[in-house]
Image (tube, rainbow, N blue to C red):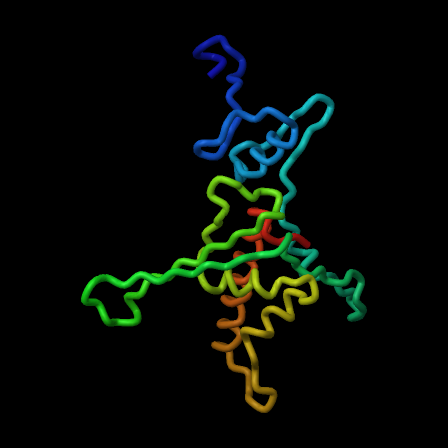
Length: 189
């Protein structure tokens, strides 16, 4: 851009990130707008302060164990950032009767979370798994506890390779949902 125009940078002076949101007027407005940018704004500078988005620390959810098997760092427990209201709606086309063709949408309202937007107030979740995970994130369960709720293994049954693969996929899905909930300030750890 600089080579073509001779201008070293472009500064957007109408700082707002949400549709219909007025231009920020206070430091609090700026921080909330920065958080709502979901990474499209990399750094927020206000006076002497430089604010960067904190990435979700997955390692802290897992904790750390020494080579000898001793726990070095206790795993952290994800916790909702406030009271939550859930709303689920279902849609089915006229004349349709197949349960597989039902579309469900779950939204949450969390007025105490940092990125709560007063105009719409509702945040749409990806799926029922994300809603369930948000529901159980009360600050008392570790990632292992959450996974155990979804992957009960019979102790008398032999663990097969497909069981291990299924648990890996489940772990990836749960971690992805937790990271998304963290990025949208619905949970913290």
